[in-house]
Length: 411
Length: 225
Ligand SMILES: Nc1ncnc2c1ncn2[C@@H]1O[C@H](COP(=O)(O)OP(=O)(O)OP(=O)(O)O)[C@@H](O)[C@H]1O
Ligand SMILES: [Mg+2]
Image (tube, rainbow over all chains, first blue to last red; front, side):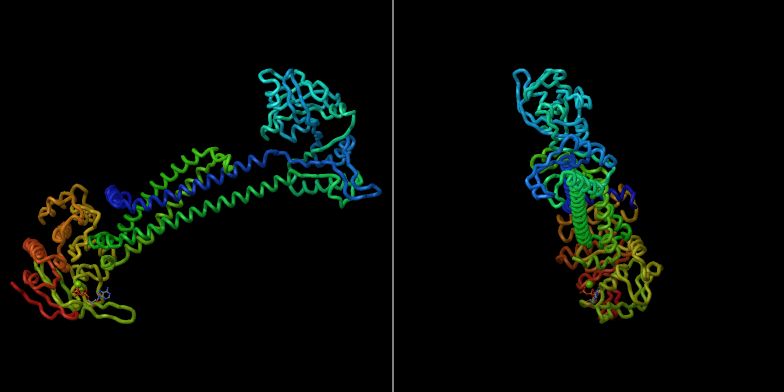
């Protein structure tokens, strides 16, 4: 019966002649699928933007900044300015050697850089070579700073892509000299950074060279501790604590002082964003499941209504010789056919809409590249079709069982 | 053709049981045209529905063309109805979204007859009831008499042994009623066994035999010709 050509013709006939019914059930399924896919896709898009915003620095680091004390301690008054020096760097490195990959220096300055007639103000980062890994700086041309530059206090500069555009325009910057802070700097490399435009307006120079021209001091304003990638979030918290107590003891800062040294763990940010991302995906799943359930309820209601509306017709068909099975097959075939076609339509339209959205909602709603995994979309469609069929089957079976005389009496 | 002995039927409504048919004994031969009369509530429709296997009975026996009919499951009942019986209802019971010819062809669909063949047979019966020009019309576009004639054509299309009509003229005016009865009589002349439930004496008088029910019992059974 189910694969009989003639019975399909009968179904098509019925579908064609009962447009409202066909439309209602088809529309419910199509809309159900459409809303599901679009909401789910938008949710994924939100997650996308979130990931690009908050997971830029993939390397886990702990940042150390010296500041002023607020509590008198061991004969020192409060308001004492703490300093990190080159020898502190060596001490820290030796002390935590086993748990860290590197401690990187970053002293930030801001001054004008000039090439021929073109000049602009930039932030200059005086760093050690390990900074490349901490910041995930990508070299486009030339090279990054190396140990030789540090030891020999070379006046070398690695400039951002936008700095190169500003100052050199079409010229090749490598090997050229730029002028700033009373000295000439040789450009040895050009970099780009996925962190965005602001990052690409920086210049990197050896920190030792900057110290030399700053009256030959040995101060360090910020250290960036790069720790083992395999370290868990909790282990990194312990490392953070150990660093803090070690530094406080070394620099005679009260253990109760919240200042003196400022420590921030990017692992913490990442942990927060990781948690936020998982909350986000739970919410998205809920929305998805919610729409699906609503769709299932919708199609079930319509199928109950459809079968009820057809009770008398079913009675007539039975009186003239329809068996219960043929009645069930009729209702099922019709509902499966309609839900398959409309489910497919909803799927295609939704995917077209999602594709069309692309990055258009990025600026206002932070939704980038909404998408849905094909398997999720297909499963959702199958689930709706299945429940549509089930929702048709149950009342159809009931209607097929009742005596035709009762169905006929039903006005 | 129809052999009924000591047939009883009760309807149970809640705690009460309503004894509707009380020991019906009747035998109807092939080719008879039988009117079933009686006041409202006497059990006419109930008897006809049992004969038509639309309803079942409690005790007694019923044979249709020597086949015992008792407690059939719905699938078997559907087959028998399709093979043996044609129904004509007071309210026509046509499928409203199907055209005249499609309605007539429907019993043939359930007999597994091919589409072209169905179409051919259905058209023959459409002509027979004088509505050859109305094949593509929906029931809503037909008059009561026309609808009933379509219903008769549909009942005939499956070539049943017995035609059962429950007040076939109940919803029609007297002229149309006579036309429909004339058609029924003509079909009977061609050899079909027909049972007609009616309230109207004129209709009953056109039949060969009048059975009168009262409170679920046959009170008279008269041969008119
Ligand atoms: N499904 C049912 N459930 C309960 N009682 C019923 C049912 N069908 C019929 N009856 C009762 O059985 C009795 C006989 O009904 P039936 O329909 O056979 O009468 P009838 O002779 O055809 O009457 P009418 O001339 O009004 O059509 C009535 O009292 C009716 O109320
Ligand atoms: Mg009646």
